Length: 293
Image: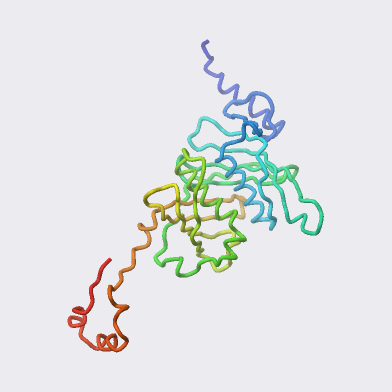
């Protein structure tokens, strides 16, 4: 069948009318440039879509002070024809804190949108994260250049490291940041075997600051080599556009933290010998010590 030259334009115009009538999340009928998927128990959505839905809920929790957790994704719409698509997800979130006083837990239907800003790059923007029925302008932010965070001059794990209680209380979104980075960089993997070792941040306002960089040291137990890694993740929020951004990358820890040099046999020296060695010149003292990596 020979298509007319203006047929794509007509299809796009028809899609625009459907979006205007029903909204992008509840759009009906056939559409051009959009693919609709319904998630069921027998055919659940992909792990990456689940992570994107969790990112939307995390944005909502961070701004609203709530503690919603993802129960399941009901459906989603993804843009086609681009290496960096946008996902529009309808999901169910549960707020267990609502039942703390003896009442039932709160279930809410959420509408969230997450866009990739480059193929194979951990640069994600979230412009929409709301309970269904809440009103807000659905225009997406036009963000082109987002710099990936770098390793600072001073080792952040020596400056501020989260204590065990902080890690336990915030494990859900810390693990989300980590799994997003791994899933985007290695999309062929559906399951994760990641052990978080320690986490540090660069801000004094605390771990709930809207703008902060996090350093997550972890072990990828599915790898035989280079399993000790560090993920650097920066989150930011633009107050004017209400755009929430996560950007990051991972490195083997050996690329960022040099191994400490140690003096073999120093622990065997007596306190008296150490004092004597301190008084020797550098050349003489070197004869009693052997430096190794």
